[in-house]
Length: 233
Length: 143
Image 1: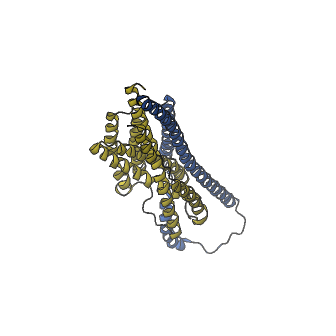
Image 2 (image 1 turned 120 degrees about the vertical axis):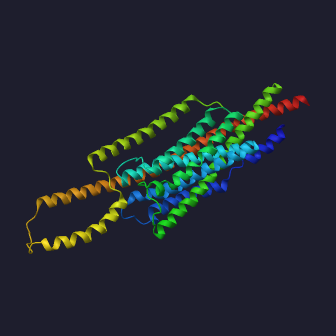
């Protein structure tokens, strides 16, 4: 790897997606307009129901992040390509961020609707387990050092942890919890929900891309440091 | 990849906060279950209302006494009404408060994530530049 290779490599990875940043920022403002002004007031839960428009898309994107992490981890296990590993880590980190949003907005909604912050009911419990599995993945990847063994261990954990998403999804119908499921929405509410989902997808892909860029650069830095220390630079 | 040990402390404190919230909620649930006053689900409320009304009406009619309209103000009923409206107002305030907290938290979480990514990116970029210049210097030396 000479400095020209390095230049081309870093140029490829450091392109900041300006269009996506503008779209994401505008989208967030639009989402707030839709949620607070356009969406009609729900009769039972009143204002607290508006939390739902960020809570549900965040939950879906949390699942998508973890599924992507498992998919890229599986590919990494098969190909040993470090790019796949970087993508898996970036997806897990963004998935966890959306998971934090789900697990903070959820109790706030539950307190207003059920009168308690948390219930050990199937959907909430399985979601907490899923979140903890991927937190373990993130802790191992962040603090375990940068070697092939840690990467492989993390990849296996992600692949084995992701099927828990299925249990989270079926928890309400199979074990009959208190968590709402298949709610009949007014057409305006549906418009707001799907718009928020679209805006969150833009934000999700932007965050994954930014994070992937950081991991790729970190990998380049560690490879270059090793090379320089070998040749005595 | 060496990370500052403070990050582990931050992570652990976050986990403790989450666990504290969970256990706090659990304690309240258990206490309510023991009192027999479990919180009512909104769905249950909606379902119960239409069923209760038709059953109550036919039973009440035959026993009803001839019309005796009491026009005197009932202080108990007025107090109950006041109590109900206060309770409803408090609940409405709580709903708005939680809505604002939730949306603020969403912004804070996203902002913290972007800021952390940006800082890491800046640190890595400057390190990369430094290493690149060292590599160029070495290549020129070899020539």
